[in-house]
Length: 183
Image (cartoon, rainbow, N blue to C red; front, top):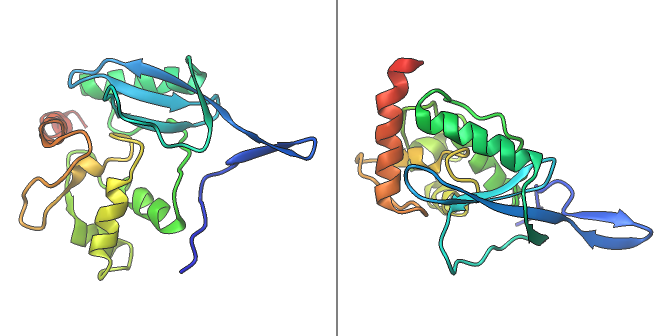
């Protein structure tokens, strides 16, 4: 099985030497908890609910600070949580295999306020037998809310795992359901 990273420009080459990108980390407050933002001036690399001792696994140097992308995602999240933003325009940088990136792209097609099962997500990728692999790729999503893995539920309609916790997943789904009338 061939795995190829779909991250654009993991390394920048300068004077024949490989240089790791320098990303900036900041934190934003949301109605359901603080979120960690890691970005540079071209893309968002990570958006997750903040946990004090959770390590960040990215192949880059990370420093504290803001970027134009972290400021953009902060403004977009404010609008999302106020119920006025239904889709995001922040540029994203994926770090994963081609299959994982395909799964994440499929997540972005789930309409605001709707849910899919893992089986439906796999079927939409023309991989109906890959339900477990799709579920695992969803689990590895590094960009919460914008890549809406919270919109994936069990085939029986039950809430299933979410990295931020099922309470946050339920809150996000309820929030979107309340605001679909504003479309």
